[in-house]
Image (cartoon, rainbow, N blue to C red; front, side):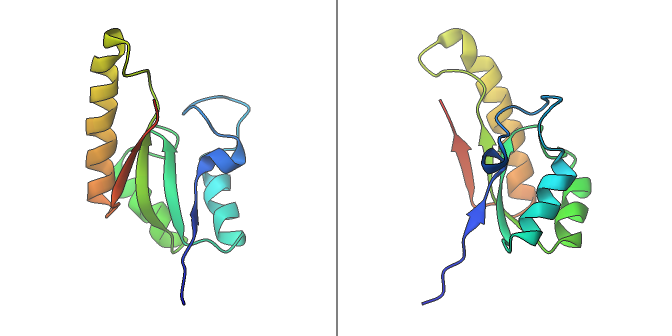
Length: 108
């Protein structure tokens, strides 16, 4: 049986896209390769580059593949969050689809 396992930035303590003291995204990608993974989940939208050509180049250079993008920007039970969740779902979904990701993770 052949099983492929991926990993995401949350394993590096990344919970938001732009916290100054978290692991820089290039280091995350390098350490993913060093750990032997080939599949990644993108983590919070905006942590990895959102420009598809830039991210594709970075992933290709490391022989990594994107399995999912993630949105974690509010709570569905609060209608005041819906517009920003929708915006991020559309952006993350478009990015993921452009890079061949099969899934979008929505964390409420």
